[in-house]
Image (cartoon, rainbow, N blue to C red):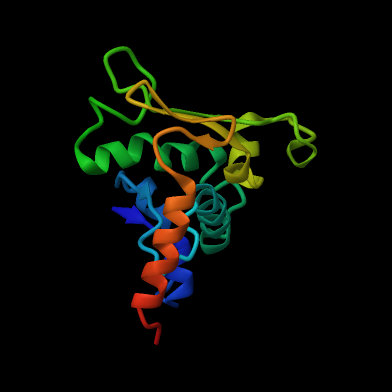
Length: 165
């Protein structure tokens, strides 16, 4: 199953018993849902929300630790798609999809546990580089394969075409 905690919160559709599902052996992946129910589609935000909600829903501060949350966003997502042999973890023979996260900024200090830092801080804004299938897509926060100005212009155009409720 795919857990989309921020979408669920925005739509008031309840709380997923993530820890209970995982304890039952169910593969729980992490998602953002869509822009209609999640304004930023930030997977790092989902990581933090999922981890905190799992603790609150279960009443157990140890529920869904940082490593388990990261697995939900990576390997568990690949398993949900049936692609765990191709993506989801860094292993020989798999697609080399990876990001680099800046950890030297003030907002990332003090750093004690890298996994916890990724889950519980604003790490999404700290992504500096991105590679998909080994191809660089972002370098030093600059998009390499997409024109940012054109994307902004297109988004503004479609905003005028779509009438919000």
